[in-house]
Image (cartoon, rainbow, N blue to C red; front, side, top):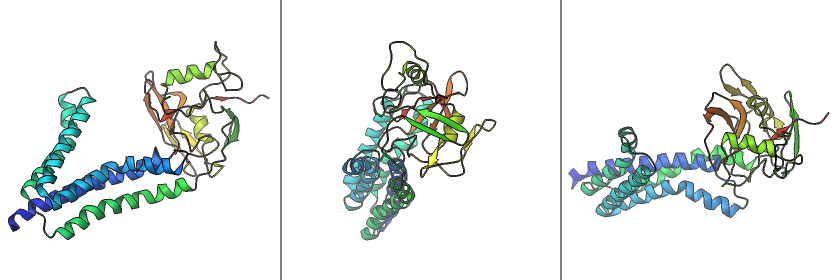
Length: 307
């Protein structure tokens, strides 16, 4: 019996490591792209979706400790199903298979280890398998949870004049120039065209180009980002292609809506012929393909104030 212990403990360690990695990802992403639902129940329910991979990995490991053969079968089945899901969404190639093989094969390996191994004592194995991932989740969620709970939000979704840090612009109200619909994730060209057709009041699209509104440049939006209702002191370093801030900005009024799934805004600035810059609510800027469409990606049109 003792000779089976090493394989069992390796299985527990590997299963716990997988759960801890999912805990790291889920707890951070929950407060990065999640936690936007208008009700507390909706936000908590969404949190379970982000933490589901961790909880499933923990459950499989605990089952493997108590019922090794059952855990072995479940881990193997999970690896096969996950691999089928991953490769069904990608064009099969040797590079794709090799890049995802460690992830998809690991559950199968853990299953084999549980089939032949028996971790003893069980009590210690239970505490490791359940305790470490939960500890990782709590530690990683502490700072973003505190930050999200203290966001500045004034509830104003109307047209806004935002000025400071050398920039003075009017930002579009909620509507076609500032969509909150998770199904609406336009590419760069579509966002530019929608700005061109936006009416003077920003509430509907005209039948022909009005050319009143436009996308903000990367420099304009970086300089307009805020934290706690105050300008974050942003500066766009064109040479380094990097944004720097005195204070790290956040998803707050007046530029962002905490109850919107949008965490990225398109900018008007092109990186090259095929790529344009987008900005995250926390101020990070990078170039992405202009053809990119995502439900979490949107834009907010701007126009110059009248003299």
